[in-house]
Length: 243
Length: 331
Image (cartoon, rainbow over all chains, first blue to last red; front, side, top):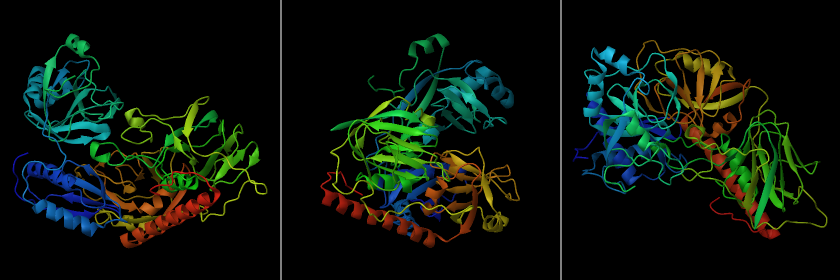
């Protein structure tokens, strides 16, 4: 992460054991980038009594033990952390990894491909090309550790489905707005399903169930169904990692 | 020493459980764990374990198991009929179960969940450091009928010449259930201002838990109002106990296995001290709400915490006097 200036943050109580942190800025893109930056600062220093955090696209829910600290103390710490000169990452966080994720894009595993193309007034090949030329950054780990990425560059943001799908296969590559996400386990979604990777995204039997973290970068690489079969099920690893 | 527990019956759903995952929500995994954290913590304290040790949670039906050596056990949670070798024993107290005798728990009533703790370390799989199930991630942790599970324990049994059971007089904070409806303390939420009618509704109306409720959240039937505009709320993190008004005419109280982010208006939050009782609420249960401020919410929580610490100290003294070896650490 690049050198960033000091942030200003808003901290509001959210029940008796959490506060909601947001960044006031007119530009949504700036709000989204700044909150990732703030999350790194907070997790790097971990104010006393903070138990966990939940990332939203433009906010951070900070959970704390109310018998150990209070919203006032958390706000004080949050304001200090936001003003701190901040270069790169500190604390135990590792440097960013890069992933090249093989994906099959076809009608069978990407049932919303045609619909997205129609919505954008273009054809399927152009959509696939747009997805694969986009450079994504993982902004947060969503439900069930799903990597939620920002950076989709298509003609327009992609709409969600009106009627959510009830049963989407693991490994599905899904789009909404300017975001992409990979479905780790079978389940429902309102996102548009455009392809599938043969890799296992989350393996709960491993001590580190995922190989990615916020700040990592991702590109999707189109492969054929036959090539996917050869990779079937192997655990997703970043470029340069030893299998 | 290792004791085997052989399960002859497991009711509707019996799983390994604990107080949940630490520091997992930043990774997209809800903390999860026992819906009724108070009962789970008390069960472990009563047998001399750490509060967060693995234990067994049962969601009703009949549970039966036989240990092959003497064990020290405690049953807490919803009121239920507990027997050891067909003889009635009390819940919410340490019970010595002689090896070869069957423990049976049935007729769970009023609440929905029963907790069974056994002195020692109950062996179970872990995911992100916790034995709590996470169905969404394929970590079921269910205990199957006919299966055998192991406990590593230093407990060597206890026989007294004159007393048999009920030899403990401990200051146990038993979870009390009011006659219907149950009252749940709540504090204000961020969207209460934009739906001011909800303040009165929550204060005076009665809400009923529907059968579409589970560990993700309780869905309540009852009067709700919606915000005037159709303004989209950007999806954000949501804490356990958040009271959401979705687009439909119902109220949702988020549970420990909630989806971590949502964009529905939040009109209030259940106080943390009220979550244990909420964790026992099943379909048909009537709930009332009571507005309190955050200071009162924290005060209530501190009272509950004080009770747990008093119990820990008393159990520690009693077990010391009896010469029980137990891993009473960090209680």
